[in-house]
Image (cartoon, rainbow, N blue to C red; front, side):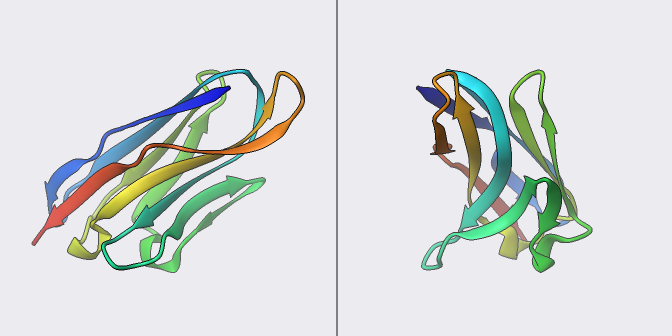
Length: 118
């Protein structure tokens, strides 16, 4: 089994910054891809940023958000700068893991609330 623990969400004023973390633990042989998604009230979950070989960002966050990963710690980060009220959402990390039994699975974090006040 693989567990994901997210942290770093909170309330911030517009223009501020937050850093989200997502630590994976358990039966991990390797992590193939990582990503951050978000879901605002009444909206569908959307991709924010991902590392799948190359790095990709949603147009709405390009130049403001940075995704990174620490392979030694099995942790993925999302640095969010110049936050806007429209960034308010629950943020979820997603990892594609090759387990120690060589099964490839997709896992989601529990979600962390990010609220940006104007």
